[in-house]
Image (tube, rainbow, N blue to C red; front, side, top):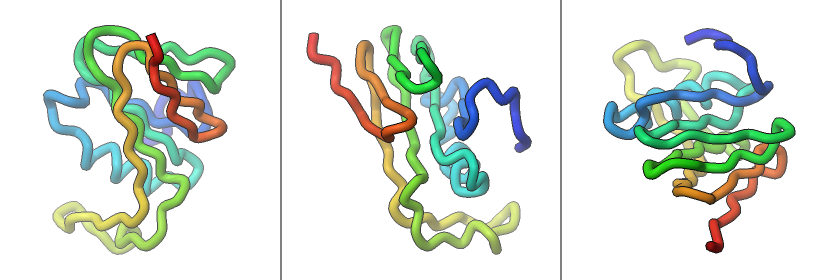
Length: 114
């Protein structure tokens, strides 16, 4: 893992997230990167439209997983090697469907009210 493309500071994006079971990988990345405390896992047939670097809206028939690491407490991430399972306290997870939003700066989930 590295710095990525740097489109939005503090944000990690992973694709093909749901079917390939990448939750652990994204949680690990969020815990490892203190300056990137929000991870977005794009499921198949889903996307996020991000406006003004803050408002992320889910579009498509799939789902988007948002992992918020801003309140991480205890973790073994500093001592974990490639074969050690990680432990993370207070990791927040949000599941977004079509029309739901996540406000990155405010760390707030907004339910689609269609």
